[in-house]
Length: 176
Image (cartoon, rainbow, N blue to C red; front, side, top):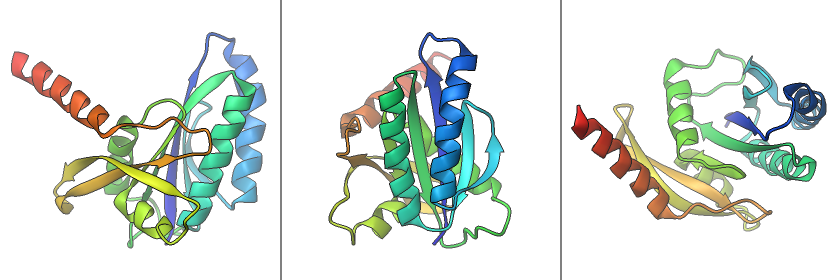
């Protein structure tokens, strides 16, 4: 099963030229090593297609570790997989929308993923995940569970984070 990886870079107060010059080679080398194909993006947000879920998870861990080592930026990484995803076909707008919503639940130094990704890595005991919430979309009856990857120096997201954000959104919506 192919996977999509979206990475958002949040630079620390450093010149952007410094970040781009130091981070771009890291991103390119890791993606090349894991057969990632860039679909779109710039130096601060990029979308990649990877041939397997396992490769997407492994490259996510390596990217977060490299970014932390450099210390110039923080990153959120979102992963999504769907049975209909194919590395050779264009990405559907539905998958992009779901991936954006997955990434919204993330925080700096996290890897957040959809339920199909978490199910694929359940067979690998070296990976631990925790449910952080659910997003609702008409394409997924009953909603789509969202998980956070634990360990490897990644920040952890408590389930309450999702509910806090939801309450904030509902409060804003009630103002209008």
